[in-house]
Length: 196
Image (cartoon, rainbow, N blue to C red; front, side, top):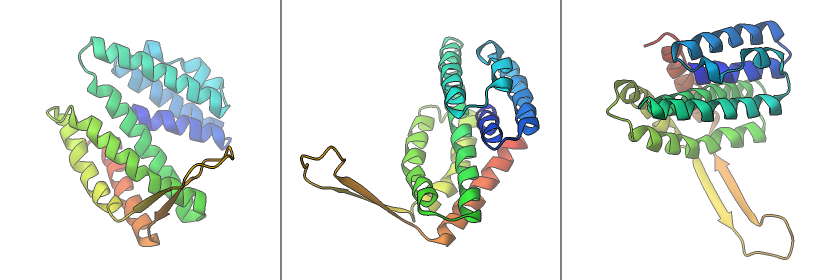
């Protein structure tokens, strides 16, 4: 949940919802304290910072420090759980935005998450003997199956003298695929929040 709520702090600030952001900051502080990593979360800066770039730098720095702590405590799987939670929350928010206001940029970002999901599952597999990881991987399996229907075609063209990248990506999936991805993501998200 720490990754999810950290993501929500940025989202709330981005949309000018200061009171909601403050509630998420309190949740982040509580969760960080429970994981014994509160020294790596600057709660006061989180409350005051409203610029997305600054929030991203703070999140990255905090995660690196937490990762070092988790490594020393021999619970490195906590880092991938935080990363996965943040990724899942961003996917959830992006799917909801795409459902409300469909556009090609959001459509492509959601489709690209197929690649990220594959990478997350690979990272999670290193810790699959850990009960929490085993449960999460089982929960992500239907999402992976939904993403199997998303087609990503990379096209690389010979280089030119222009500075522009000469490759392109075509992402294809249907509104029904989007609905299914959102439904599964929402279900996983709810189970995490409810501690199931």
